[in-house]
Image (cartoon, rainbow, N blue to C red; front, top):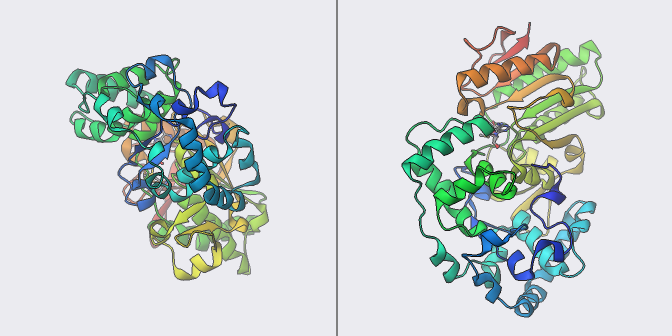
Length: 414
Ligand SMILES: C[S@@+](CC[C@H](N)C(=O)[O-])C[C@H]1O[C@@H](n2cnc3c(N)ncnc32)[C@H](O)[C@@H]1O
């Protein structure tokens, strides 16, 4: 899976290389799972970029849609959104627009990233047809396939499903049936388990099985510890640059909260210079990383953990009154990279602080232990590890000592 946004959801390359227009518009809704943020629960239309014959054979219906009708609709509805996108997205977003269907691509980007359901609601052509829906034959995983899938997901991502989470698999994967035009969940799983042939399905299935719940300044105490203990200690040591890793950063609230703390402590007598602070957010999910980089958050997401004062200080309005974007001063402090915690961290360099919160809970003890020991290898001497409030290193790693921060605790490399 690539962390380059050009290579994932937004239709890089020419129209010809992406299949027919109709098949490219074979978009469906996918229900983002579990997250209580409304942003992530909303169905978002996505473009299936790599339609292949095997995937389309059972689903011919998208071809019935007329390209000219679609172009007209995009002309009617897409232009306003496209103009918003030009104003609010990063400069290099322009390169995603194939000259043949500029309105359509802008519509896709806009609907994916900014308005989510509002665009698709006004554009029946990018919604699945009744015929598409009828092609779905089974939304229920068989017992045998569940066992194979549980093992596969654990091998790929570390996530332990347990013996009896059939309902979770059904609910998370159902929406992918329409998106990838596959008739049954069992068949979707078959394809997901062949990443060499069905790379996009495989990536989307792993993505769908992750839980992306997050909020600003989650649990408060890690950010107090950062501001009152860890950053002053680093400032006194004179170390530059200070490097902080948000491992499993979901949609960006954690690394951007860290950046806000670094900005806020810059008025203290002893402080880390924000210009000398590098924050890196990583996640397994390309979709979450796209959201991180876009850094637009709707009112529901903004209401979770963010004070009015911080909202006014660190966010800028957009043309959509329900959406704000992270101020460039904060945004430029953070870079994002796709990374699987099961893999190697050697290319990331060394860090002074690692936030790895609310992801180890999904892994087995063996995997937790491996990850904690790998973190130890990329922490600078005396570096800190901050875990989620229900997570601990007890019985998993002897590389850290516990530091009471009152409130909360952190782990320091021995
Ligand atoms: C519940 S969120 C936690 C977000 C944030 N750290 C917080 O505490 O608010 C868990 C994140 O872990 C990511 N994740 C799950 N398995 C992963 C893996 N093997 N490697 C990297 N990220 C992973 C998911 O994509 C998800 O965004």
